[in-house]
Length: 255
Ligand code: NAD
View 1: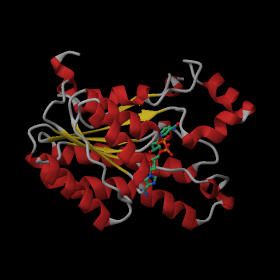
View 2 (view 1 turned 135 degrees about the vertical axis):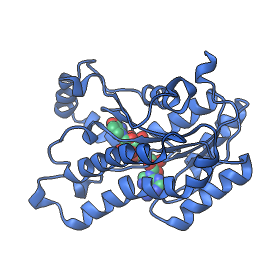
View 3 (view 1 turned 60 degrees about the vertical axis):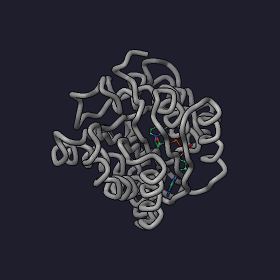
C-alpha cells in the first residue's frame, strides 16, 4: 500500500464496530496501521474484533457504549485517549432501521421516528462532540459518517431511516465548514451491503432481486467494500476532501 493511505500513529474510534460494516472498517483501519477502538453496546463482538486485530499485530481495545448515552460515549473517547494518546479518526457507523420504523407515514408512530433519529443522527453527533477536543488537537483529524443512499435520495417505507441519514449528510457538510481547515468531515453512502441489517431483504427472493435489478453493479456489496472508502477518507490520500459524500452504492444513485 502507498504511504498516502498509511494510518500508522493514528487512533480511530469505530462505533458499531463489532459486526457488519463497522467490523470491516475496524479491521481495515488496523490493516492500514491505525490503533482502533471498536465500540458497540454489547461486548462479545467488539472484544472479538479487537482480539483479531491484536492477533494480526495491530493495536486495539474494545470499549462498550450505547451511542445514545452521553456518559458511555465520553467513556469511549476517554479510554481511547488514555490507551493510545488521543483520537484522530471517528467513524460514526452505529445505526439501525427497526421494523417498527418501516412503513407508510400513517403506519409509523413518532416514537419510532425519535428512536431512529436518536441512534443514527444524535448518536453520531454525541460521539463527534465528545471527541472534538482530541480531533482539533490532532494534525490529521478526520470524521467519517456512515450514511446511506437513503441520505441522498428517498426510499419508500423507510422515512425515519432516510430522515436520519439525510440529517447525517447535513451534519457532515456543516461540520466540515466549521472545522476546516483543522478537521476533515466526510460521509460514505453505502448502497445495499450484506449484513445482519439487510439479512431479511436478502432472504426474500423478490426483494433481493428487485434491489439487484436496481443496482448497476448487479449485486449487494460486501462490508469490506465500504471499508476501503473509509480508509481512503481517513488517510492523507483524501487530504483535500472534506464535506463530501462518497457513494459506495454500486451505481445506485447514478441512475
Ligand atoms: P449491523 O446491524 O450489522 O451493525 C450495526 C452496528 O451498530 C452493530 O454493531 C450494533 O451493535 C451497532 N449499534 C446499533 N445501535 C447502537 C447503539 N445505540 N449504540 C451503539 N451501537 C449501536 O448493520 P450494518 O449493515 O453493518 O450497518 C452499519 C451502518 O451502515 C449503519 O449506520 C447502517 O445504517 C449503514 N448502512 C448499512 C447498509 C446495508 O445495506 N447494510 C446500507 C447503507 C448504510
